[in-house]
Image: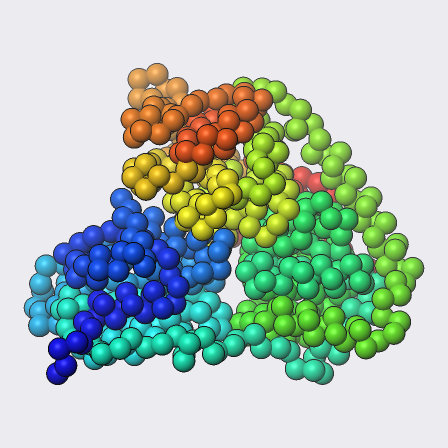
Length: 599
């Protein structure tokens, strides 16, 4: 064996550097100290960020990719350290976000002996079984010579096809065992793989035929358009054929919110003009959309969609999503950007394609009428000056207080429903949220990854009081690494989204959803602003809408970590044009409009 062999840890770190990974986010443990030692050797080439809870590393890696398009890596130790990863892995998996989770395991010589922190009751060193439902794949090299193959295959699996997180589970001794004389070269492997597959030519022609013959067409966009880099192609198609564009919560920002063809959010709490258009469309072109229950009003016809008789063209890189929840008139497996380029090219070949028929103008006029109804319906909430702050006004104030280039990372909770209704993002990464797995903490930790990915842009997290208290450890990381983010804690003294369900579906039988003081019965929470100050971060409290806007502007201008504890009302839930069903408990009612019944 040659003396200049790289060990397993060195091969992994060198490969990350070759893939231009700028950061490794993680937490130490006895199972990964040799990997950390390899990171130490290359500290000039890749920066290590030590977090205070393992799941935060995954949320940081997740949002880092959503902002920059560059996958990163996390590192955790064996046993409970890596067992904290499934939440963030599942979040990235369901939202199609790649990152490489490097997990330590017990030494191979101790497999199946019940060593400290070994999962061995069903199979030796069995952490891979723990996470195989939460990621694209798990690789577990058990000899040093297996590491080069494992790392390059793990990376390829992560970034090709439908992207997603991959786990590289490495036993303790393999980090130190001789592995290779040279690391695999990405330029010879992943760099030369393209997954931007187009649709078949006949399918493209049929799609264009359907769009041109439609009287009431709508384009529905999801996350696949945002992260597939298809925004420009989408806008070109929409403007050429004057087709209005609606979005799922995951697709928000794919079209400028102020564009004349922007319909808005389709969802259980969707905008009236959006739901009204998509449920009456004769042709619906769906791009990178999952048709989940929230977008689809629990798949009850006539609220979000009416498929059929609406003819659905569904385009997705993952064929499993096509025909999952709705029958298709045309289903095409394709990268959405490639498909849109094909469609635009096909339109170029048809001389009269961009002549807009009168039926299209009548359709757009009807939509304008619905938009006016929606605007009149929501207008009063923007003028409420009560304390606690009216949540609708809070969402609008937050949106308008931020600079146009700001990145708003929302956590999961009732505040997210208000934000997606009333924020008006101008670009694909203006508002980032989690709509697949929906873990509390995504925005609390993810905003750190956003700021590292875009250091010159303001990065703000809006997070519920419940989520922030779960993950307040982020304050220490922000101070330690001087990451100047702003947290706006949407403090409503409750798990308010679930309390709303108790009130709406269970006759107000509330339990385990309010935070109350045991002696007074009054709303209780820690003083989050004081917690921030104790950590070395500026913390302020506000309970009026105007003060909230001023506080956000001032915090962004400081360019250092700031926490704003905002007292926001919890007795109102976002109203919309769709519904949501909790089977066995019933179906809600739309706050505006009614179920569409096709003639």
